[in-house]
Length: 192
Ligand SMILES: [Zn+2]
Image (cartoon, rainbow, N blue to C red; front, top):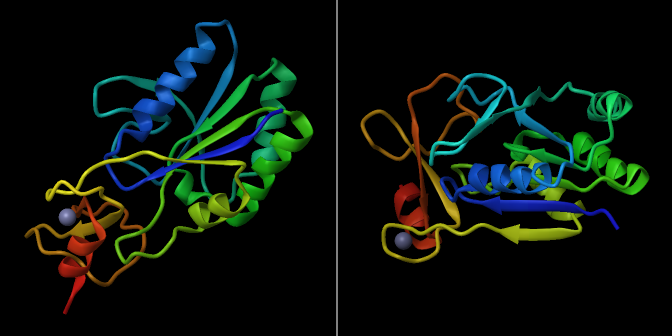
């Protein structure tokens, strides 16, 4: 039975690497996959999922107005799909996550969504909240804080390397950097 999977983590836990490896595993068995990524992420050329270890693949783009059921149905009409893999899944809307669950339940195609769990203020992203609630399987991808503990939180650093405490959840075109830390060091960083 097809399932909805949510692979979640802090930043830099190798999500894109796991996604691209999973896609490769399907493709080498001659199975067709659909890759999607958020158009909000402009770190790389648009329409690409790139891993920090140097591998990349082309992907379709979504934003919060994309009709995922229509997009995926259009792909299925061209050729059978064996799997759908989504990067930057934290940027999905709640409605889009519901639509993905419909693809799983009615089209019987597995959907693997990869995303950041919480933002720089420790709040769930909309897509991650919905995926935590609706997925069949939750898989944590682990990374470590500078202290060696598991990093579960993300802090945003401005150009001077100072932790940012206020601001939009998604900074578009900014020069801020993100750092994955444990909860203890997250609290120390954002404390007044
Ligand atoms: Zn720590």
